[in-house]
Amino acid sequence: MSSPRLLIGRRSVRGAYYMLTSTVADRRKLFVDAARVECVVEALRCSDREARSRTLAWVVMPDHVHWLMQLRDGNISRCMQAFKSRASRAFNLHTGAQGSVWQRGFYDHCVRSDESLERQARYLIENPVRAGLAASVGEYPYLWSRWPMTPETSPAEDSQPR
Image (tube, rainbow, N blue to C red; front, side):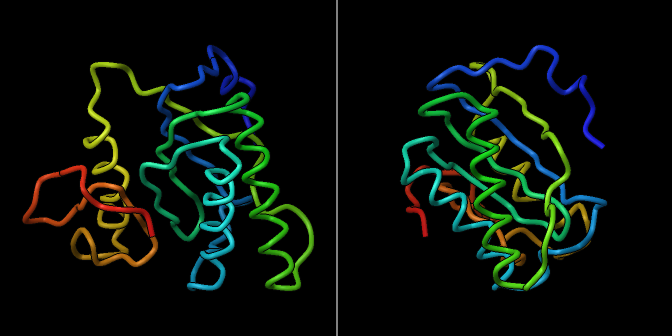
């Protein structure tokens, strides 16, 4: 269940960068194949196309999603509500399921000016390695970063979104 404490201190600042996490209801492992993950990825892309966000990196884990983004329009809660609603509809249509996909609420961290966005992106895409879903960075198929993130290279801002 979502905690009201997640709302304490939440501020939406256009142009600010956020690390967001949303969890599947009951921590069910729903995102286990490319077609199911695509429901989530397309919802992220739609948020960018609608100019709500500018995505810098994401990873879709079996039971949660991490999203590093810049807020472009509206507030962070409405942006997440639109993302979760769109992803839920697509997922339910694809699987024939009904009901909630996501746990209520979400976790947000506003990236401070002294924090490196590349470092935040690396932390995000290393999540599958820490969770034991991949042996090395770049092996897990359900992630994207605007910075190339391989074990041999350091982050550089020259990659393009898929």
